Image (cartoon, rainbow, N blue to C red; front, side, top):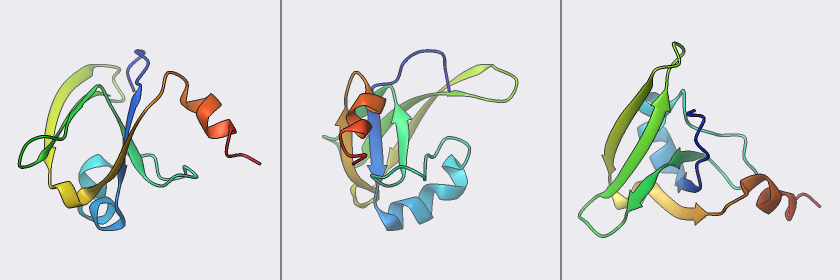
Length: 93
């Protein structure tokens, strides 16, 4: 991912993970205790589709600005936190 600190995590439903998994495989975080998610710069939930703005970085360290529209049924939750690791630590015990 980009060196910028991402603060939005978009959690996917199981059908969403299956539908989007191939497209998002390099950036999809599956091992989370909270479920599969992708880190986003911006999320818009108000339209016909959920609009995700991602700042993806490939193996050549070049950043690519990506806007992805996904059906609402693919998204289970959006989490915004300044420190995801500290938030996750609250659920570690």
